[in-house]
Length: 88
Picture 1 (cartoon, rainbow, N blue to C red):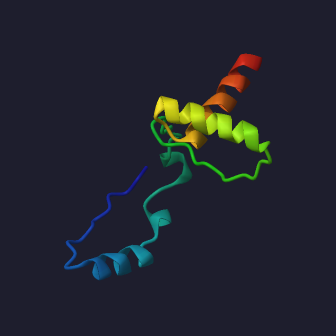
Picture 2 (tube, rainbow, N blue to C red):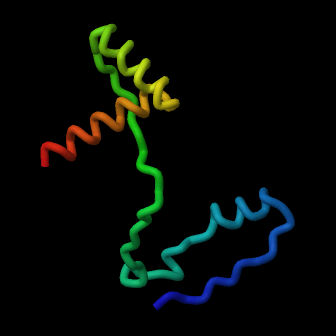
């Protein structure tokens, strides 16, 4: 069972940072105190990639994105996601 943690009032961020850097959570919690949680509203992380595409294809995507008033890379991500969903 978790022990109550007494957190002092801090005068500034440096004092608070110093307190937490020396604070040992293992003295207050056991592994059984923790529960698995989910954060469904977090924005998924993204990773840059390099992809070689024909120039004419990129130009067409940019034109279409311009017509839709959206960034062309967002449109490409949308197309890729739709293609993956269609295959399942």
